[in-house]
Length: 212
Image (cartoon, rainbow, N blue to C red; front, side, top):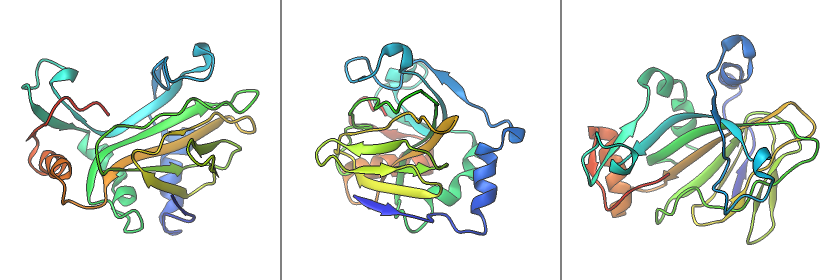
């Protein structure tokens, strides 16, 4: 696990932060009824909701009949995607191939609740990063070691994709906002090459149904 403070440069961070956090910018959030599948959820299902904004992902035939079976297709809005380029192209992250980039907003609860241990996906050799938009008493916890990384503005934590982890709510501010980035830090594996091809050409042949 690697923790980096002051991840984004000071000259551009305020603008990037305010784009998401300043309500005058009307950043679009979608209501998501589940933070996790019910079998992973540690909290009351009535508390297991969040607001999300998916910047970039990859869909397969399992996501819709319009996609040819065995094909994976990147899904993103180009204008919105460009706003977030400074994050996954930051050399501190060492992202060579992007898998998914998604923002989560968890509203305040009366106590800090751990959502449940999980992995974002089971793609071999991938990495997971959690970037924190605001200071609060929520955290990311790793199941194996019990290590906690607390939410601090402009901090990021990076760990192996197969590390089961949990996010939380917050109790000392109105919202906890994080960005999840799933990526490869090299392009050597067959899986990385598939996602790289999908990103650069618009589609690629998959090894199976990718669910991220």
